[in-house]
Length: 130
Image 1 (cartoon, one colour):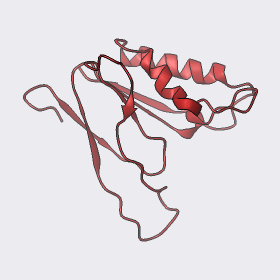
Image 2: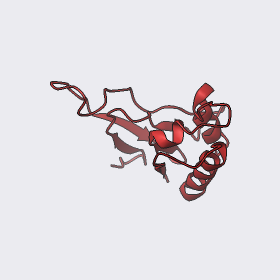
Image 3: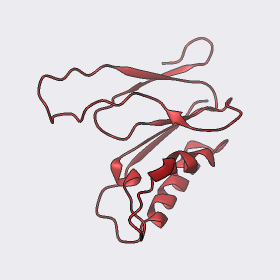
Image 4: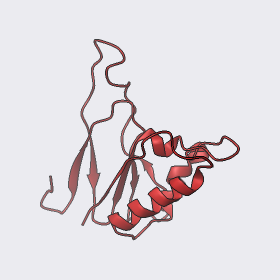
């Protein structure tokens, strides 16, 4: 949804996947932040309640959502790509880029990070508000 001021609202279904990251165009520090709160993995336990979460996107903001095949990619020493907020650091270097270029950079960085062939799927979604 987009309101009259140009702010777009995005629904975020969170159920065990890595939290989406939000890179604010207006943030002078350019440090991506989680766009939602964690929730339990869907289907693991019965009788859980999930809350609907949303993120407001202002023009130029970038929202990145990935599967754990990206965040859990291992290098030769066994470190995960997202150790020490590695994914956020990658996204921080994508400031001002279009969504397709951000997606290509993150996918290439994840592929290059791994020391061995992939054993898990790697999926990502990038939205850039206009």
